[in-house]
Amino acid sequence: MRYGGRTVLEELHTTYPCINAYQTSKWCAEHALNHLHQSHGLPVTIFRPTMIVGHSKTAWTRKNGLGIYRFVDAIVMIKRLGGSAIRMNLSATGRPDMVPIDQVIEEAYGLLSDRRAESGFEIFHAAAGCPFTTQQLTTMGGQILGVNVTYGPPETDLDREAHNLTKWLLPFGSETWQFDRSQLEKTLARNVAPITPSAEDLLKLVRWYCASE
Image (cartoon, rainbow, N blue to C red; front, side, top):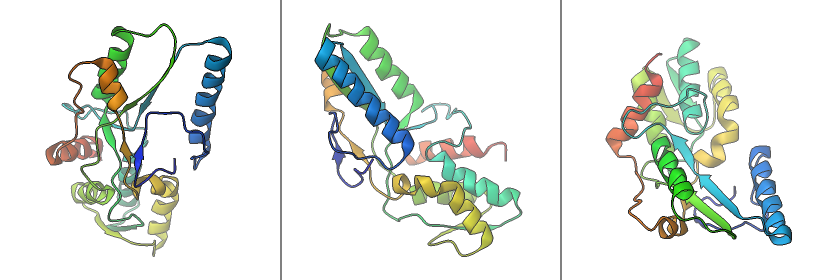
C-alpha cells in the first residue's frame, strides 16, 4: 500500500492505496466485510500482520520466498548461476516492518481467547517496528552466501535476472513502513510489547534461511 514514510493507522482505508492485485484483493475484502457489518450487523475483526519473518527464537520459517526473503532468494539465485556479485536497486533508507511469526500467533490467539465484542468492526496491526534497512539484510545475506552485494540500477544480465525476481517487492523494500498498534495493545489489555528484531536476531534469520545453500 502507498503508505511508506508515514504511519498506517488501524482503520479502514477509504482511498485506494494498493500497488498490486494481492493488496487489492485484501482491500476489497475489508470493504466487503464492512458492508456486511453496516447492513447486517456482522461482527468483524480484521487482523493485519506486517512483513512476517521467522520465529524469534529459532528463526524457523517456510522457505517460500515471500516478503524480505525474496531479496535473499535473488542472491541465492546469483550464487547458483555461478555469479559472485549482484547489484540491487534498493534504497539506502528503506525500512520494512518485520514481525516474527510467534508474535503474530500469540497476538492472534490473544484476540480469540481474550474478551471479544459481540458486535463491532475492529482492525488491529501485528507489527514489530523497523530497526533495520533492507540493504542491511541483503548485505548480510551476501556475506553469508559469498556474493558481493552493491546497490543501484541493474547493469549485468545477472543483475537484471535478480531485478525481475524482486521488482514487485521494491516499493516495500525501499520505503519505511510504520504501523500503529495502539488499538491492539488497548484491546488485549496486557503486556504485548512487540518482539522487535535485534542485529543478532536479523543475522540468525538470514543464516537460517541460507543454511541449505
